[in-house]
Image (tube, rainbow, N blue to C red; front, side):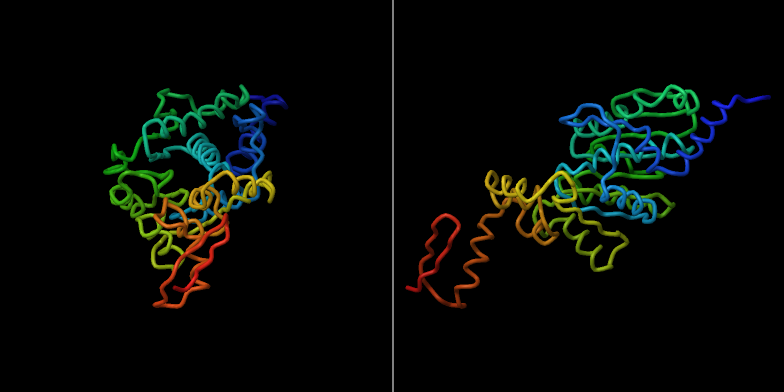
Length: 296
């Protein structure tokens, strides 16, 4: 059977997309940009780094700032895995049913705008549901709230846990997905911080100390190249300190220690620590951002 030049070229392009995820995403994958509308996915340096880590590490734990494109990246990554590789069972766990639907919606958006030749060359879609995609190559993506416990008893290629620190049942979620790793599956955990001492914080501490199997990655507010110091100062002026630390941290320590709606203003406590000796009694005076301790 003879093939035309265009057919041979498309087959070569298909094979390149199978091998090179970054090339596929930057050449063919469209995303819905909040300001620009539909655009090709131009990966940031931090996102390129994350893709490499996800491939190299079976257990990946990401602490991140808000709105730096990680759910968009996950949505694209799981499609590439399912579409170009057979028999992939991918499970997304989110806080709520609404969030699980929105995550898979981003995956379906990118698929919708693939070129016709790629859709014809690739596996056919068997299931079109707001929380599930399935293809005739044996691969499927299921996106569900963590409370539904979809991972227990499953044999999964990849489990994505989105906003792990905010799940209503983070320990139960881990208990249901941990056995997946024993049979070769991968786990990608993503979250902004939600205070210290909770389950996600304990996972992070163990990952950074090397006492569990997770590979830690931290991406601050500046991981998005379109943000600068002026942008950050604007956020600082419009948000409470704990909110700023939770949504847009600069370091992991700031993310965990100052987030989670603490009872006391931790910036104030930091200033007092430099002025007060243990056992001293007195009064605290505060004017705007300046704190003074006066011994009684």
